[in-house]
Length: 375
Ligand code: CMC
Image (tube, rainbow, N blue to C red; front, side, top):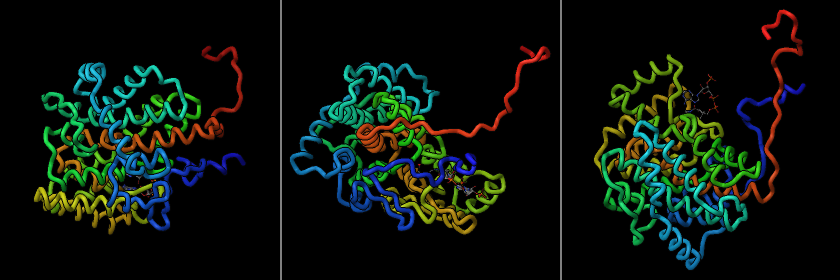
């Protein structure tokens, strides 16, 4: 029957090909354009990874210097974008600010309806270059601080942290940030990327697809989990309380944020790399109390449910230690995933088919209005 084929949440359904990344749950591995992500995280800047995702190959030295120059030249927040951000109430979630800013950038781009690859690459670079200013400025205005203009003598990660905090932190901190950006960049047909591909499949524009993807990423079952992890840590308070807290939470049938994954069932391939960066931050900031809480909750969850942490589990506390506000964590994910989303938008357009699945009807049988119907 038609219903025997329904897979709630499209679980296990292969929707299309992609040459951008390969997730292999059997081997717990993730490749971007064929390269193992831990290798990229060890050796590449975020700029190199963005170029790789968009072009399929790592940049040569001269391609990289052109790319870096273009990215550095576009970092400043447009006055209209700043003005619109200033109009948004501080009660709004920072993801709503990012969504609105991206929508405005699209509405202001005279080339927005041009879906050629060259135009879409240009738009993608614009968003990549401007998202740090959006995220950093929104956090600053919430703290009553002024905008910090970008510096073009700094790389992407250094400049991002500089615009957020007014100084370039220690190399270990910059490096942990860079690693998080590389790890968040791309992950095949996750909910937000699929959303971007659905929107693109109607031949809508790139900015509309990205705006929709931001909406999908906001939810706590997806990107919102990194923020939710920090709320859990705050709720628990200290390692000694973690086991008891977990028992109660599981009894109440709560989902423990930062654990579990639709695709990986024996561990998220990105966690060991991010955990190593978190360990460096724990040393740097001397926050072994936070590590104890992290380890205790992870051990308890593994023993109790056999459910392992996902990338959001180490990245949440890492962003906290770097000094970001908890509500800014998912916007940081946007700043990175813009690379994967736009790579998928361009790939979708290369061999587009409208994405339009079917549903099985389970409502009322056909019936007719009678004299006693309310109508
Ligand atoms: N806490 C408690 N129980 C869980 C969790 C969790 N985090 N994850 C899965 N389970 C249980 C779930 O309750 C279910 O149990 P039962 O069979 O008894 O009903 C079983 O494990 C299977 O879970 P599921 O929800 O059917 O599996 P799924 O593939 O739909 O879930 C998930 C994937 C990510 C939605 C889920 O693990 C979850 O809600 N995790 C918490 C949110 C989170 O951390 N999201 C980030 C995902 S990864 C990176 C990203 O996108 O940012």
